[in-house]
Length: 67
Image (cartoon, rainbow, N blue to C red):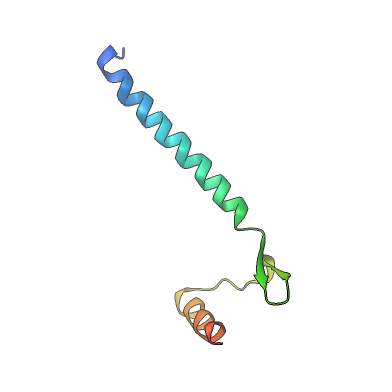
């Protein structure tokens, strides 16, 4: 199937949105794998951060969020 000239801007815009989405997903995924700044100017590796289901994540957030 041939693409008409009137469809080219729509395909170009869709391609740009797709490329921007891919870039943001990869970039933001890489930035999350760093560390979390802690008091005393040290970094906690995010590798040790527990990731559970919704309930356990909410419980951990609530328990660790209190000063």
